[in-house]
Length: 258
Image (cartoon, rainbow, N blue to C red; front, side):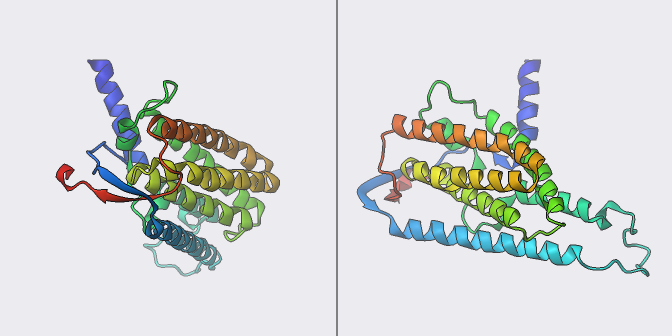
């Protein structure tokens, strides 16, 4: 019993940090046709572009903030010049932490994090347990923050450097995939999206980080390895759950399940 309580506490803490909600019944949907849902494609593309623009603007804002001179006659209630909040590196660490762990705040799409979808589908016998995902992503998040700060320092503390812009694009693509798979349960569309989006962009970002700061590339490598495993898992889940077409289908919510 005590071991079970301890496990539950760990799960609650990890889920709270990563913003993962407890599983809840998902609305079922009837597939009435094999027709491509063009509206959904437009929404995914538009939402991703909007998120990328907002995140690049956030980088621009950080570039502006960190380049502001510190006033010599600051009011006494403001942090001192020696405060970590006045240290550009401290600001960068906080910024990249928020950006990495809460990138979905910039997305207009529904990016709810939940293990519900993963628990509902048929999974291969080698699939990790649901609790493994927030733990792994939390670890990867820490490595992403450290590697991004290293890159930021290597490019003369420039937030608008190409590697960092590529990084926020990678985060946006991952959030869009989460919408397609976790929120909407479109297992077919999730396969090409996870490959063309998060996986390919992870390769690009890892190479750019590696070229900019070797240690940053090494710290980001586990993220690429894990996303590769995730691609195989997504493909396996698709095969085990009916092999629907590899594009978003028009669906109609089953109101009786609501």
